[in-house]
Length: 449
View (tube, rainbow, N blue to C red):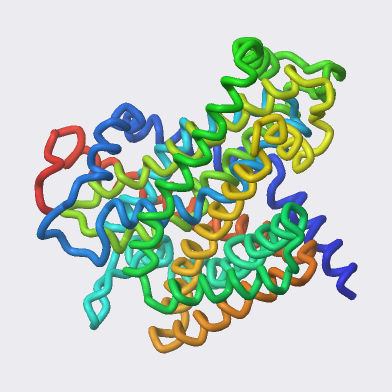
């Protein structure tokens, strides 16, 4: 029975994450980029706002706290192993398409953040609630589609945000240090529970401390590898750009790949990594203290910049330069490629282990908030306590059981999350343009909503 279900979701994912979804997501990225007059131009302003306090504004957490929580959920094992998978299947050119997808995805993440604040509501206890479900209901009157989005999100959180990440931690601990899976699972479960049971403010504060550490730690490891392979970095960058438009021949550590393969796997990895268009990040963006929707939209857009334009691109250059530098590093397998590349760095296996451990743990924390808010939309605030405990239990289960089926189900649910969110973005693009004109184009970012 399990094998049959797994096969069903494997086939379903072939459709859900095929070219139609890629065209829909990338098309939305490009459409919003043009409609909103390239909000990517304001990325430096957005970064400045992300580390500034918006005093006196409504919300539960700071703008940086909301961004850190969104980055915690977004920056995961996909930024490391996922990029390696793109290179192993699509060749070096996949890195370029992944990066390009991140550039255009900034506009979509901007739009998601704007709608989240525009249509958020205040709960009786003062909490701010928002996300695509509220934009669909309040902006478009599509309650039924809002319910579907919330349902897909509440279920997806157990997959990509919880069990899959916990399994990555326990597997890595076992393979690197020989630690028993159940022992690692217990430690991660207790750590996650200590944070999750404290609510959104504790989650945001922990993520605000964890995200900068894990990002800087991983980036320093990548920079060290680039210095080690410095004679091949220029060649790697040239190969990445050339392979994006010409087929890659097999040999020299690379598998053969066509331009279409490079584009497909690079775009798909970029879309999956930065979650632009999936509708997850705006759920926490709605809780931010901000004086108008556009300020938080700009802050939210930096998430895609850091996730894909910086970290995924950096990972890609590291991996391609390692393949060129070392004959024993091959692109035939994503996970093996990552381990082989980092093994060339002194203490490299420990650098990789810490990176994956922190990336996976942060994703567990971030996605717990998404799932809770979706459950609250479906069944009220009283349902979140039970959901939270189920989530904590799932962390332990994910550490000790096989996850082939869960991976496939999670992939399907993530795609199903994206569809209602894209409807909201496209049908409310007029609202996005109007709000952007009022606050951004007319230089009124400091105005109150």
